[in-house]
Amino acid sequence: MINLSRNVLCVALIGASVMLTACGGDTYTADELKEVFPAIAQKGGVAEDKAVLCPFQRMLKRSGILDNDLDEGSYEIRNKVLTEAAEVFGCSSGSCGTAIGYASLAQGNWNTLDMNRLHEAGFLSHECGLTFELGGITVSDTQRSATLARLEGLAGDQGRLSFDDLMVTKQEICALQNVEITVGGETEVKLIYAYLGGTERGYVTYSDVDKFLHATMPDFKASGDINLSLIGDVE
Image 1 (cartoon, rainbow, N blue to C red):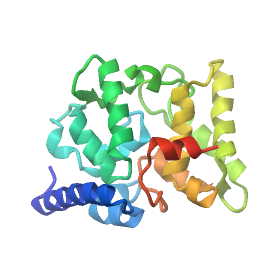
Image 2 (image 1 turned 120 degrees about the horizontal axis):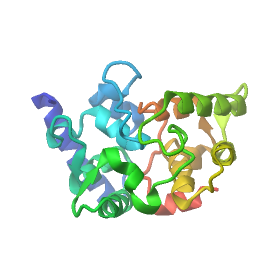
Image 3 (image 1 turned 180 degrees about the vertical axis):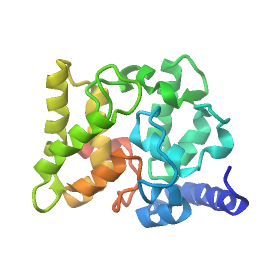
Image 4 (image 1 turned 180 degrees about the horizontal axis):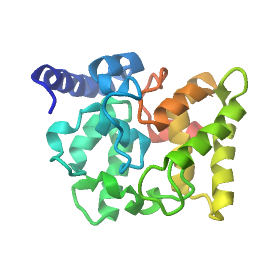
């Protein structure tokens, strides 16, 4: 469980996030989030939960922001709670909330999402994962390592990756598994690129992709909320 001071900080962050969104302000920086949620500051400490396929949701779970709303051993979380947590971490409530709502309905739920059943999230689900095997329902260290090795090679001496680098890697995984890339799979890559600040800088760093795929807060994240409009600009 989170201690009282952490609870107060979480409530304050959620409240402030709503105000920032309404006023068009910036979201919290990576450093600010790591200060409040130290579990996401490095790969050690609190272990990632490999039953949660989405790296963003896996990071949320690891951070502790969901602890008071998750029963021990359970992955079922209310849509509203998950949407508010996602907003604190920089995903607009309109975009993330819509996706969470659709995924929960695809799972057969009305207002809750099973985070360990993201492979049953309708068109948002996809194969040729960056971190899981074909048909896999948990994170695979083997697949993740292979993905990162390929990306490290593409990053070169500067350690930078373009959106095309990420997409080429994704498409190569799809080709090896003999499956077609889907809207969900393409959106995954766009979300990663946007969240790690690719639309602002024209690149993302390999080290940040490595951190993110390990459910760790990157050194640099987007300064504004991730939304459908921003994702649409990724190319």
